[in-house]
Length: 186
Image (cartoon, helix red, strand yellow):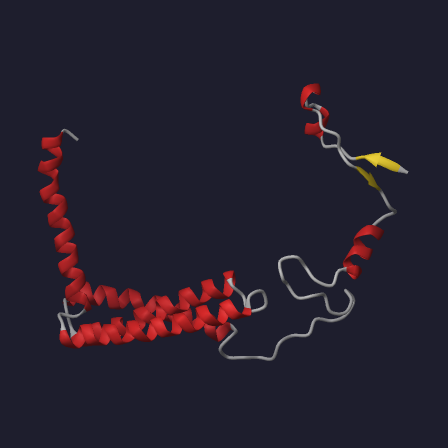
């Protein structure tokens, strides 16, 4: 038996915009889905094919200290450690130990964030070559950032003084720009 499947919006649509809906053969309860599930070997977006049947137990991956809750705890620890370091930098001003800690923790914090984005948007099961290229590029960029922070803290003013100078520069630009905006008429 054949039925014409139509939604409510298709039923109330004016006659001049009426399109023919495809005729779909309706099978008995859930047979279509079950047969489609067992027949599919690959999914169009590149995911792995279905292994086994739906009644088999899930095989859990082996425990790994880097991939589980320890990894999540380490990310939170890095994020939370930036709060007192930032407050100490504001209260005490520039200090070599604070600059050293910021120069280490901030690049690692950024590395973990970008690594999570690479893992989410370019997983190794979908695009293994691109995942490896992006992961190793991120590792190289993190090493360059760590070296840059080291050089900046030892041979220049340090990270805390840089932020202080930039904030003073931005605030002076905005305070000097207000009379300019009044002259223009904004």
